[in-house]
Length: 471
Image (cartoon, rainbow, N blue to C red; front, side, top):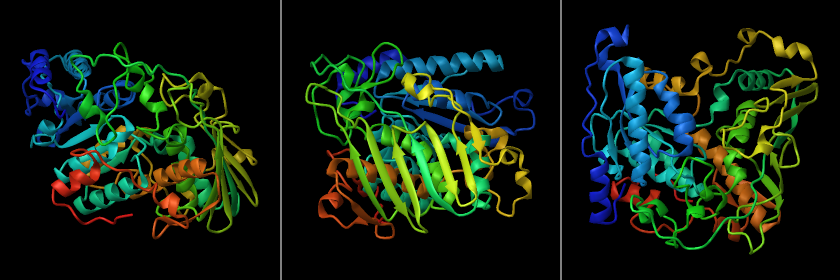
């Protein structure tokens, strides 16, 4: 992807020189009722931990609806592994060979007219640019959360998705899980009365990491991987493991993200917004505090934290690592608790996030058996409680998926404004319509400089897209 030297590109081409296009005509015995003309052709961009644990398996499960035809990663070794995994999976499941093209320059994928949609499973700092470029190239999009590195980027992404009518899904898979839909629909239909408080528990990442400079691996286009962020020396703990798919160091560096407040916060804040009908708006004020690692730690995202946000209608939302991992809705007539029941976001999540907890609980035990079909207000139910299937069917039918670009942006905004509040350590007021604080220093943190030629705004300008709101 964006190879930065002929040598890097030549080495990569040797790894995947035999790759050719996946056949577009599939025998009817394989597809059953699905016509070949409706078979979605998908490309995977980013072939690391989250792609291998969640996103590639999520599409590989539905070969009657969609097939991977291409993969891309700045780390050519990872792209080659993804190519092999996909081809082996199809060979075993479909009893036929498949040829998946592997790329280090993702732009080759976006230029391929046979690609209908892309799955973006990259580090956080690449999400916004890739969504913008893919949507402007006419591709439908699935992207991992969080949506953006900054609130300003998120506004651009939502505007592009809206303008291009992109079928979009973000990796907020809790929406496609039965207990979370149940909790949200019960709250929206007044089962526990007027909501006055929401309590969200999230994990915390440890400090540590090795800052010692290392040689850049021969198959890794490190300059492009850094993307819009500043150019800094390579060390494995700044990026991802060169052996295996363990939890990467970039997750714990503010250069590339905000830490657990966006990593897990994007999941739980999304559910809270869905339940209180705040998907398209946000809070009116916040106060946040956090500890940060000392200078001996290479990894520098926040440590322990507590955030209190005020929403319209006298709703208070507290986000803290001191609370159990999950979401507690408290209303005038009772409470509802919802979580993953101890399941981690991914297998490589820190052990602290995997403590056992009830998936659904409430002050009124009968709510666990309420017939949701009787409610006057019905929320989107994903087919077979499957998030990737929801996206695939949305593309086939050209309809909205369970998530939207604007909802994803508003969720990410709350997480990022919480991070801003952690750094400033003082109360802030927020105007959801203008998407601005009452504080000049906080507003200066709505955007970051982009290292040319990278970045979502640079990509939009290059494509001639100007229909966006500047924060």
